[in-house]
Length: 417
Picture 1 (spheres, one colour):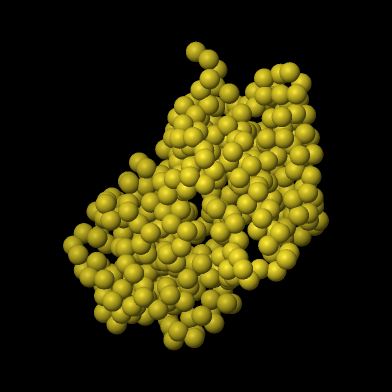
Picture 2: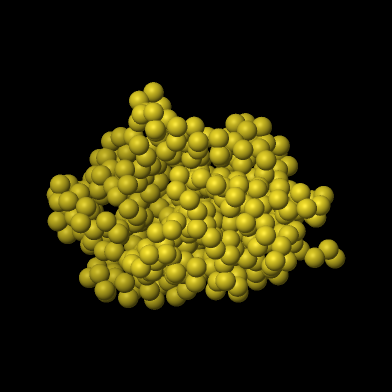
């Protein structure tokens, strides 16, 4: 049997991001358990070297990668404004050769990491040796996300903003066209990448974001409800995330208020790192008894197990049509029933096909609140059987072990000689 090539996760500039912390180390650990040799290469800001909270978060992120792979990450700092990506790639090439990873698979998270990986591949190939294979792990469409973050149309951008937008587009196009394979997170994203960059179908794949199973979820549920002061038979709705506009906190609160007219026993668990801003949002909406909490990375599940529903509302736009929100899997792994808007990646269709959650429009909050109230009244939806069914679906379909198996299968097929 031909030995499996090592897999090296390449992360550029976002190693401390919560989504990376929740996705990359568990996947690497699961790949390692499948028998793959795994490693990681991290490119971080010079600010991470300064004492303080950024340094502490950076150290914790590196320790998590080391625990998952069994070796310390290869680490370098990067220059501001994404300068010197090719230089970083050549430096990575030297380290890969020293570690015996010249023929590895560089599993590059997002386009900038892929550009570093491509430069490393080219540098090693120039030596006449067999070079690494580069796989772009594409998690979003960066130029569209950038416009959404700015809240502007392209015609309204400043000169500097337009230059940044074009840079993002260039990064993504080069990465998609030159990578040996591209992994996406949803069917709509897979289709978009294929059409946008003329990527052949045999080089494209998809693996949704995963969620770690939550052991003893029922016991945690009881303990969390006691901690929160929520009666065991009360209806608890969770909002989990930042107060970024695209997470629609205002719409989430309006939907909850509408639900409360039908279910006076409903309580809102607002789980966010932005507690001061969240308090203002809740006060403006007249929500007086919300449970406002913050939890460190990895601890959110302990409180989420208490919830019956989890809010996951998004605008109907290209960013969300191709997305795969991590929160969807986290809710299901906790046994929570998601409340989604239509057209969120594959998730809205999963909910409709497998009855995993509630899909509703939000233009008319009273109507949406009534839909959720009716869903809560359906026998079995919020009982133990329903929670068990959601947790089992998450384990069978989107656990790290399942994601690792799908990634390994994709790599075997897309990179076959």
